Structures are given as C-alpha cells and as structure tokens.
Length: 248
Image (cartoon, rainbow, N blue to C red; front, top):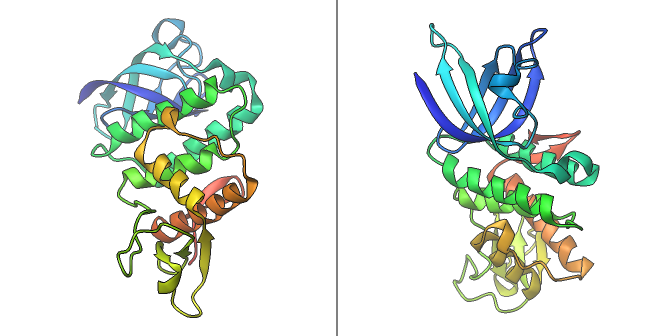
C-alpha cells in the first residue's frame, strides 16, 4: 500500500540512533504512526518537516510484511512559529493535540477533525493574547463534530426553548429548564450568556468564534459544563498531564 496525504505532526520520538517514529493526524487516513528511517539526519527527505504542529505533505508506504508504515518523504506546507517560542501557547496547543489523540480519529471523520485542529493551531499561533479557555472550547467543538452535541437551545425534557437560566444535569448529560430539573439531581446552572457561547462554539470553526465576553463567572460556568459533558459522553478527563478514561 502506498498513499500521499496532508497531515499535522502530532508527536515525534526516537526509536533507534537515527530513526524516528512520527504520529500524524492526516486529512484522509485518521491518525497514523509512521517510521522515518534516518529521519534524524536526512535533510533531503524530511528537511524541517518533522517537528510538532507542522503542516506537511507526506508519502507513506507500508512495509513488505504490511505490519507498519514507512514515511518515505515529506514536504513542509506550513508551520506555526509562535508555538515554538511561546511556551504558554505551546502548552495550549499540546493540550488540544493530546485530546485529539486520546479521542481517536478514524478515516471516516478525519477530514473534519483535521480541519478543526488546523484551524485551532492557526488561531493559537496568530492570537497575541490567546484565551486560556481555548483548549477547553476546542474539546467541545471536536466532540460536537463526532456527534456529542450539547444542545443549548431546548429543554430535553419538555422541549421548550431555554430562554433564561437553565440547568445542565450532570447525571444525564443534557440541559433542562429549571422547572424540569428532577428533585435532588445534581445540576450546573447556566446563564443565557453561557448558552449563547456554547451555541457559537459548536456552530463555527475556531477562527470564527465570538469570544468577547470578559465575565469570569461565565467562563467558570462554561468550564464546569464542558468538562462534565465530555466526561459523561466521552469518558475523558485531564489527569496528570494526559487525557485518561474516567473511572465513572
């Protein structure tokens, strides 16, 4: 098997003195791990390409026994230099990448996830003062794309529009109006402003997000709701520097 594809370099590691393994989010083939033999010294085949977050074009060939993929050659299409020198932005980009890795990307949904990830890296690279909440919002956008939409418009019990303060039911993973909240159930309050931001994040790509709200209380609401939503539907939570499956 041989193919050419565009990709974002997620992670690079050494497995022999001059050989590298490279994890790539591709446009058409999901996340793949390839081996770049001579990758740490070959200037002609991989020059300047094998660094985290680089946008590349790659030619990949399977081994003779079909057990692994070889990276034959690459071309650098774009790179995000601010992510290399700004450690705060680099940390935020890594958080986004780790979530994509933990979630997993198949060929069926790779095109949408690829474009959202590329858009997110562009936003982090270009924004002078990137909002610390961006990785969290990115996680919501990614899971919404995979079918775990958090509906901020209608009560999931009575069907009425959520025009005022509503409640996110932690044990159910959806919003209800205050009237429909079951007695004794754990709920997270969401203001109309929070609902509007949730709708904006899920409807648009990162570069088109409207993030002008400076109310810290709103961002705290969002953080609690998004974390609970992802934990309930996907089972992932940030733990000790990586996303891990929750025990619940």
